[in-house]
Amino acid sequence: PPPPPPAPTTVLEIVEDDEDIEEVEIEDTEVEEDFEVEIIEEPEEEVVEEQIFTIVEEMPSFPGGEEELFKYLGKSIKYPQMAADAGISGVVYVTFVVDKDGKVKDAKVLRGIGGGCDEEAIRVVKAMPPWKPGKQRGKAVKVQYNLPIRFTLK
View 1 (cartoon, helix red, strand yellow):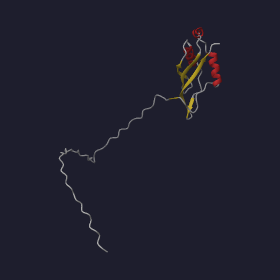
View 2 (cartoon, one colour):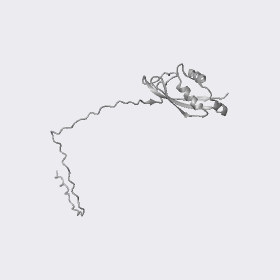
View 3 (cartoon, helix red, strand yellow):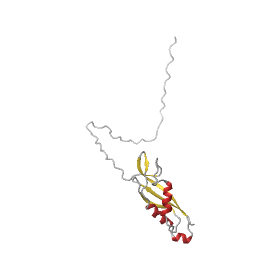
View 4 (cartoon, helix red, strand yellow):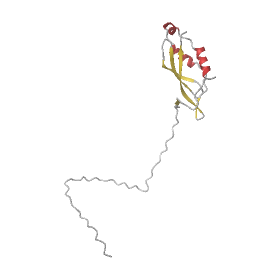
């Protein structure tokens, strides 16, 4: 058999470069063996502020259910005289938090109609008996609840 062809020769081409290259000094990065890294443990901070849920597996409920809630609202609301005189009627949207114990807290008007109806809605919501608290993963949690309260003149 004939011998293998010779390997191609590499030709180096020298290119003139007019740019000056700045020398950069690299610091020594070797670590000494007797150097010790001190590990600082950060203490875990307890979360004081509990999350307020808007949707949970089991929503809070008024004692006796929704029907009893409407009965309570019907019995407790006193139509404000100012609203009656001015012919004001409509829906007051109230938001509040039902805490882990079922207590109603932080009642606020989301959208009101005026004439004293907003204040009356807040008064009645704050006076509610404790609710059955909402639950997430089997644990009682704080839940924000929105409640429309209708004021109708007869």
